[in-house]
Image 1: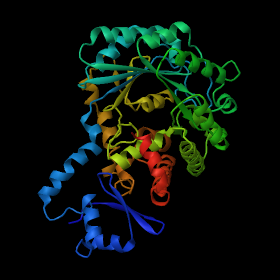
Image 2: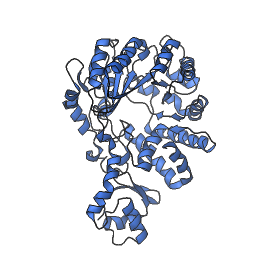
Image 3: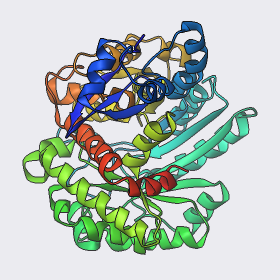
Image 4: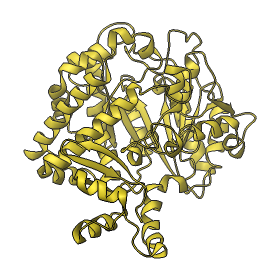
Length: 461
C-alpha cells in the first residue's frame, strides 16, 4: 500500500513529501507508478520509497511500529505544555520604529506593569505542567520598567522549587546601564537586541522618538553586554528600505560577531499595517531579498565564516532531522496559548504576542482572560484557545492539507484575522507566499546544488 503524500512539480522532477517530513524527488513515471500502486516499481525505487514511508510494505503492523517514533518526533511540540510566558512590561517606548508592532496609531493609553500584576502572572506561569519555562520581557521598551523585571526574576526564583526557569529580554538597549548589565549577567538573562543592519539601514527603520538614529546606542549596549559575558542574540526586521542592502546587513552581523541572523519579513500589525504603503513590499520582493541573503550567507560559510539563517534553520531541522523545534509560528497547531501566552501590562492575558498586538489596534478578540480571575487551566479551557487551535491545524485546512510543504509549515490565525478579518486566510496571502518561496528555494538547493547541503547540516548541529 502507498502512504498518503503530497506532491509538486519541480522542474523536470516531482517533489513528494509525507507527514513524517520525508521527501524525495521522483520522475513523472515513478510518481505515476506510486499513485497506481507499487507493483511496477523496480527494486531500488520500492526500497527507497519504503524506507521513507511512502510505501507501507506488506505488514501494516511492522510499518506502524517503525514509523511511530518518527511521527512522535515530527509532532513533539504536542507533548509540551505552555512553556513561553511573555510579560509585556509597558507599551511605552523611547524609539519610534517605522514598523512597530507593539503599538498602533489607535494606541492612546500607555502604562507600566505593576508588581501585583507581575506576581499574579508568575503564579499562573508556574502552574504550567512542564519542567521548564521561559519568561520573556517585552514592550514597548521593557527597560523603562526595570524594577518590575527585577521583581519578576526575584519573586519567581523565590517561589519556584521544581522548574527550570530561563529569562529573556527583548530590548533596543538604549537605556542599558552598567548596573542593569551586571544584574542581567548575574541572573543569566539572555538578551535579544533589535538590529536591522548597518547604521544607514538601522537608523532609517529605528529612530529615537526625539529624533536621531539608535544604531550607536544598540552597538554600545552590545559591547557592554559582551564584555560581561551575557548571552546575546539579535533580531532583524526587513522594510522596503532594507531590500537593497542584503549583503551589508549580513556583513554587519558578521562584523559584530553574531553566529546567526533571522531574515524576518514585516508583519502587518500595528504601525506596520498603518504605514504599509510606505514601508511594505510584495511577497515576491521579499523572496528575492531572501534568496540574495541566503546565497551570500552560503558564500560566507564557504569561506570559513559560520553564520546561519533563522528561517532556514527551522525548516532544515524538520527536513533533515524530522524534528519539530517548537517555533510557535511554524507548527500545527500554532503555539497560541498551548505554547505561549502574553501577559499585558494591564493584567489582560492574550493567546500570544500577536494577539496582544491586535488588542493594541483596538480589537480584543484574542484575549483569554486576566490575571485576577484566571488560572492556567481556565486559560487553556477558554473558547479562544480552542478556536485558535482548531484554526491552525494544517492537516484540516483547505489549501494547506494538500500542500507539499504542509509537514514543515504553520499558519497564524491572528495575522489572518488582522489582515482578512477571518481566522482562515481567504486566499493565498503574503505569509503563505513567503514561506512557500523560502521552501521552494531550499529544495531547489537540495536538488541542484547538493554541495551546499553540508553547510545546511552544520547549521542544525
